[in-house]
Length: 252
Length: 170
Image 1 (cartoon, rainbow over the protein chains, first blue to last red):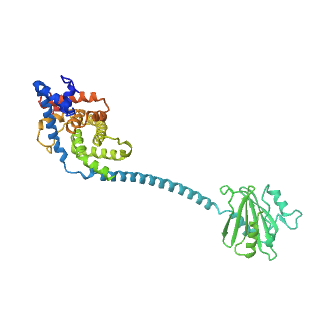
Image 2 (cartoon, each protein chain N blue to C red; image 1 turned 135 degrees about the horizontal axis):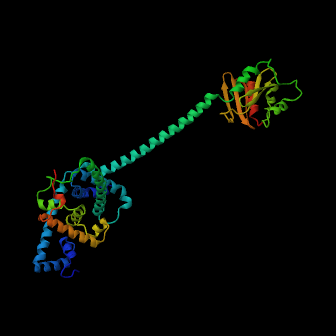
Image 3 (cartoon, rainbow over the protein chains, first blue to last red; image 1 turned 90 degrees about the vertical axis):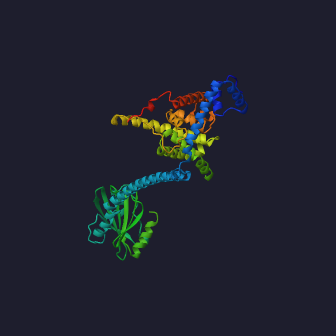
């Protein structure tokens, strides 16, 4: 309820049509009796009318399709997709970087040498050569395990391939960059040859997971344990050698 | 979703008009409306309060304008250093209706807040409470600012006072 004479605020509220009906009525009565104020109010009301009229044209401007909410929504989605896409591209770039780094590492390792390449090499040079000078042979007083233990502390036991008919016949020490290595040659009654090779881990190969690798006509089965790398090398397709490999798989 | 779009679509002309009254330029007004819509759509589920949608949109639009204006003023001040300065001067558009040209011209010369106040209250018919919420000031403050705006409009229409904006520099 307004009081008379009306406050300035009430007058403006009147001009803005924000008074309730009763107050509106009161105000009109008051204005009728106060021409000075009435004149001012009328001027304000005219301004309001003029403003409304003057600005009404702006309500009827041609549609701008870019302002349609559906379009704006789409744009927002596109932007979001673009952000995702950017993030995805970044992720892919980083992954490619990481993968190629890993790949490069693998390649460096691979280019260094396939695992236990020297075992295969030693087999080719010595094992099939019966005139090989040996550091241990069946004529020596110690058995082969004792001979081996002198040179390799805590190494795994020599594989027992007797079930497949292979027995140790000679052994030879060689050297690698990392230290001493040894090869023990096994033969069966038919003169087929297998070799057992032991060496310290190479600089980059470290210890090897159990694996098999074919190199020409030869096959190398390799593994690690007790701080050394081991390989058994023999003809890849020979059935007797296959049987010996089966025996290898038994716990040593 | 479509219901939301329809509500927004219906208010588009009013948003555009308000934007023009602030920017006094049609194309930047539409840019302003667009960014307002983007803001409104992304904030719809979290920020939208009960109450008049129009008032909510006006308040987003007004804030966006003030932010942009502040940025551009900083920018234009920097620009003045290089160009020697130019008074920002607005030519009333011929697109506008010729009715009440005097009042309109006076309106253009009001301050940003005065233009917004008069448009909200006198033209759009928002309540004092809604305006107080948009400007984040007490209702009493809204009323006294509105009173000043109205008097300024009156005086400007009668050509009794001139403001610096009246100077037309070439």
